[in-house]
Length: 176
Image 1 (spheres, rainbow, N blue to C red):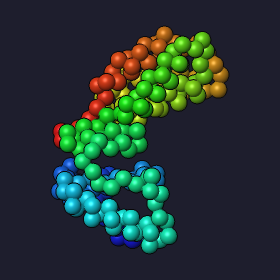
Image 2 (image 1 turned 45 degrees about the vertical axis):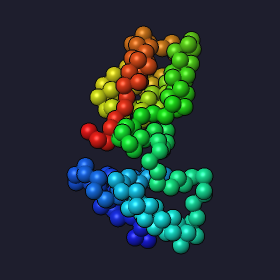
Image 3 (image 1 turned 90 degrees about the vertical axis):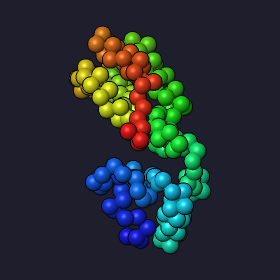
Image 4 (image 1 turned 180 degrees about the vertical axis):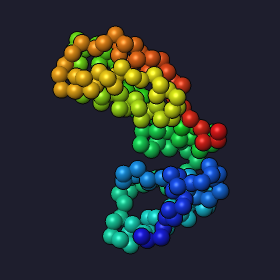
């Protein structure tokens, strides 16, 4: 309502993928800007910070990162503005691999436990959407044994192994 952001500049409202002005995305309480001009991005950033302050909602300094050409992590995704590459952050990738291996080494797993791991994978797989085709039995297992523990089906084990093998390839580029 402050006018600091224009709804037409939200990534989900774009009619074309051109980055010809500062664009933004919002996910729950996280906001990011994307622009080819550092000056234009800085102006947009300053307007947003001012709007927060004007409405007595000063953002926490540790949550704000001014415009930069350095690799930036947002929602667990590393964005390299120089190359346009998006990939799961190294730390988040490591934790996801560890969580997947922990599930694979358990004797019995509930559907809820598997769903938590697969949900994290799904976020990562959105960077390479065709990889979502690698999941099917995991979803069935999660539904069937939502609250009960059971031995993992062999096909679920295979799917988790495929995810581990595909994970280095799950990257995207805004330059494409």
